[in-house]
Structures are given as C-alpha cells and as structure tokens.
Length: 405
Image (cartoon, rainbow, N blue to C red):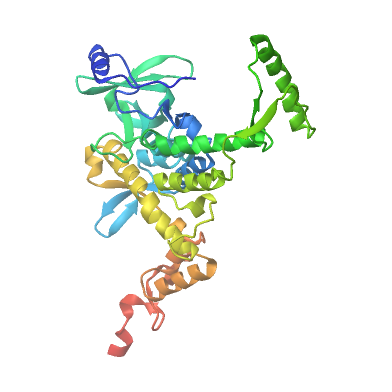
C-alpha cells in the first residue's frame, strides 16, 4: 500500500476553488504518511500497545465520567435533569449509541486526528441527537473560506452536511480553530516505534536466527544462481530444523547485519513507549510500563489528582465549553452550563473517604444526607439534612443560643 501525499499549495488551491473535497484541505492530516519506512495512520498506530493503551485510558475514562447540565442560582447551582440537552450528552446521544460509546469515539478522534466531529440532528428547532462522524468517511474542503463537509454513510451514500449542523471539538490547536493531528505531527515517533516492533517480530519469525549470507569462490552463471536460490529454501529449512546443512563447492556462510542485542532492540522499544506516553501526556505506569517510577506522588489519590490535573482536565474543559457554545441556545447560555463530575476519580480508600466525610460534616460544610448521597445511601431526612457543628452536634444556626440564655 502506497502512502497518499498531500497536494501541493497550487493544486490544493485549485481543488478548493473547484470545490473538490479533500481530506487535507481542512487540516485533517496524518493519514497515509510515511516515517522510518512505515505507513503511519490511525489504524497502524493503534497496533502499538502504548498508543492503544493511552487512547483507551483517556477516552474511556472521560466517557464514563458523569456529565450534567446545571442552572445558575443565587444559592449555588441546581442540576437540570429535564433539560433536553441533558439526556443527549448524559444518556443517549442518538438511537444507535449510548453516551459512553459516543464520547469514547469523540475523544479518540480528538486524541488521534485532532478533531472530534458530529452531526447535530434537529426536530424543528429542538436538538434531538448527535451522530458521530467517522473520520475515515469524512472529506473536508474549503471554498471561499467556508468548510464543506462531505460524509459517506455506511451504505455508501454521500451527502453534504451544512456547517450549522456540525458539532466539532478541536484538540490542541495553534490557530485557535482547527485541532492538530497527533498522528501527523508525531509520525516520526510512531514510525520509529512501528519499525522497532516490526524488526522484533521479524527476529522472532526467524527463530532468533541471524541473517546469513552465502559466498562462493567463483562467479556463478545465471542457471547456477537460480538453482542455488531453489536449494536455499532447503538449506534454510535445515537450519530451522536444527540440522547441519551441507555447503558445497567452496560455499561459505557468514552472518551479516546487527545482532538485536547490539542494536539495543529492547531498549529502543522501551524508549518508544515513553515517547508515545509523552505525546498523550500519560504517565507510563498507567499503561503498564513500570520500568520508570512516577513523580506524581506515592499514593493512588495523589497520582489520580496528577492524572486529572495534567491529562484529563484540558480535554474535559474543551468538551464542556464546546457543549455550552454549540449545543445550548444563546438564551440558555446565560443560565445553564455543562460540567463533568470528577469526584469519583478522587475517591480514596474506605478509611480515607470516612475521614473526609467526618471532617466535612463535623465542620458544618456538608449535611449527613449529603454525605450519604456520596456513598449512594438513601437520605434519612430530619436533622440529617441540616448542617451540624462538631462542637455540640447541633444545627449550625443555633450555635451560641444556649450560651446566650
């Protein structure tokens, strides 16, 4: 399979002027490029265990975090479970997908391609669904400064999607608009990792046997070379079977190439894992690479705080702000906003949670019922839903009343 090259500036300009769709016109790069002699695209890089693990870790973690729509209020915020956008982003974005599966696909596209793109479906003026658009079926062109989206459905039917029906969340960007493709900009790293993996596979396929060259004392004729190549298979078979081959007519066998140990193949593959983790900002220990210790703290809670702060938070903010901007009406944006609930990631062990809840309730920052809700326990009502003070275990608004009397 040969790699596709990006069209030159003149050709791209002509294509855009003619309105011919091109996956490169919108910056949707990283498809079919070559590095280290390897084809680098979203399918090949996912064959690398480190890329697979990083993409799954981030996309699955975000996809399973609860997200809600909240209404701004003078006393705080109020969860709005009846808002039409709530059901779409929290439970069922469309008829064929659950919210977790949908957000997995969106985040994975953002991680690898730089942009997660969906189509907004309306019933009248009301948003009723979000359909994820698979990147490999989407062609994007730019005509007169306006992007055109041409999508090929699973049945092979092509259709244009208007700009106002596009819900797009960009990843890391330099122009404030289009997300950069990690596959494109990290092609050298991914290509080297693929080359190292293929070299290791080739070494094991040969049964760890070195590459052998056969030499002769004289120049062979064409017929002799062809006969030798036929006999070479038999010689190779004898080597693989552990038998001693017979070298005739002054033939000699010499090892060529570099030994895997001399090429530091294992060290190179381990370094590739660390390089890939840097591209996704994932600590190597979280994808099973335990050769290096982490500097994100020793406890699981400290490590999760670091993962949330440095890895997940930028992606969560992009999603939340994109929902507020593109899925809520201008009027709703004044009153409502979307937000992920990340508290579940920060839950420590049972003893740590008990100590935290005890301090929150004892300091009057949380009622007993609020604490029970965090442990998925039913409310008790009465004084259990009243703020208490640890000094006398009484309602906080009655503190000092007994002393005054």
